[in-house]
Image (cartoon, rainbow, N blue to C red):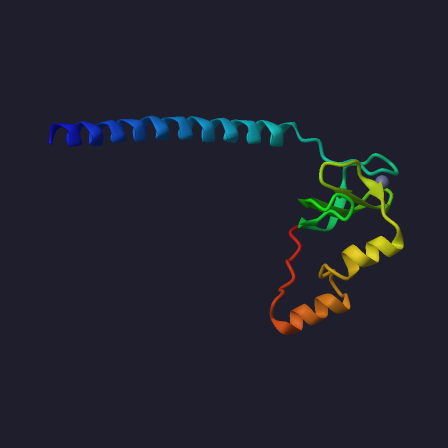
Length: 136
Ligand SMILES: [Zn+2]
């Protein structure tokens, strides 16, 4: 009986230490994420350098890299520069680049509900998408 009680208290002690370690790790991750977010520089237009832009679409991707055949994932965004009107894209933390009409059509027009587009109209009609009212 004494051995069982000792084992149980030992197990609870180990569990307590485990939770303290996990808590410290999570607190460290939170601090690092906050520091990274604060240090993040908004992407600059590749044409004029302005950081003022209209967000067109973006999101997360995952799949398989054709060249390495390894699984891959990350994020992307497509924007229009408010200063010069250039359309640019950025994948992961890469350098923003000017987007061709063909790429814009493939990634933005066909996949995002741009107000007034056929896609947005279809989504609105389906009840799935409600346009966000612009805040002034
Ligand atoms: Zn620009």
